[in-house]
Image (cartoon, rainbow, N blue to C red):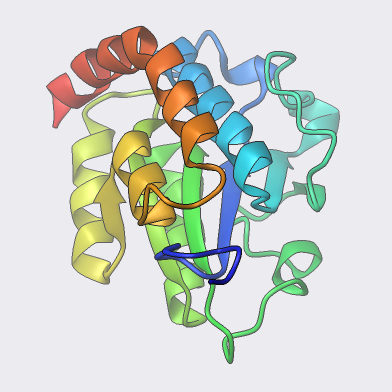
Length: 199
């Protein structure tokens, strides 16, 4: 029996898009996006999933917010393009070996949308977390998610994605991930209630 028995997703990666301090006052329910992203970072650590993060024009808009500690990110790149699919990140991927990329961040209708479309165009599977994305105007979110679903992305939730990723309770990391889900369940309920009320 191989060590990765039952894992449904073979080449997962976590993309964290532009969650910067400067956006905190402007983005709808910013704190909820932080909670989901923290859970995904912890899960990525348990499951050994590579993390790629970006900032948008860091010199003007500042660094990734302090609550998100990602010292082990494969890339933590700055960009001016709206899409995260920039050379510094794209160099780690090959369309010949499609990755399963889970995406959190802001804004749903701009950077998250353009990143998703670029990833799909390059042959990757994309999971956009409905409990992990937001915009300045909440009305933008369901329109963006509907567009991305129509384009071929999977719109799902953090908990659903984590269980799909594992695929089998027999994997060695299951207990730690299940513990994380339980530990964050109160936050998850609150995040889902708030963010998905706009869906």
